[in-house]
Length: 276
Image 1 (cartoon, helix red, strand yellow):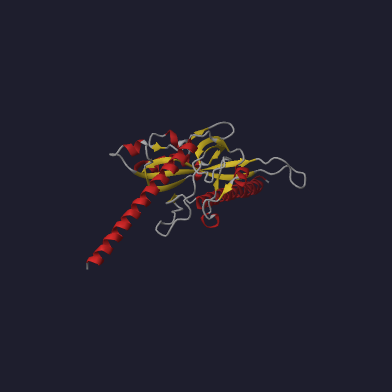
Image 2 (cartoon, helix red, strand yellow):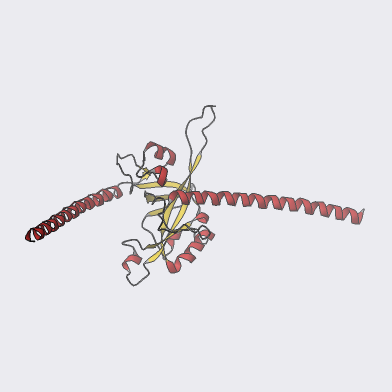
């Protein structure tokens, strides 16, 4: 019986020692990761004048891109993981195609997070940025290389549950062109500057969270509500909305022209029958 107790006690001591070594190793790993992120955030932002060339030149798949649909891009610094690299990109913010992501807790070190008596749950507002890449050179036929368009997702910030509906409506309807100017929105992930050439966004590269697991609900597309940052799904949704809007505008134009022609023919016939 004493041997059994000794064996159990020895096993318990060994397991405890293993856990202590594992925790120590994990602690130093976290310290190293935090130091790397702080070093990246301290760098000057990288200007992404050509998103496609930037991605093709430094494509580093952090996860299985075929399954997750997300690839990380480096900043030409030789880092294995370019996440948290400051970048500058210029394009057109498509406020009318913004989506909500959440619910999520308030970002750390933000005013709502520090206010323990305030709301701690809310939503992130994600706005697509349409970036036009102009390629230099010419194609095989000697013509100028065509430009391409990329969709970059910009996290505009966090807004509390009680105010997210109003802030989101103002953004989508154009009443407030920049939600980061609203006192109800907490943002620490970037800056937005307007200009004649579009909007210049200074932000930090982040990975897509990938395809949601079975525990995360499917997105509510009617309300434009996503429960995770599934970048490929959000981009596909935005492109679908853009195509649908174009088709609707074409249909309205066709309907107006058809009604105008029909009305013109009816008026001409009515006038001829009345005066001739």
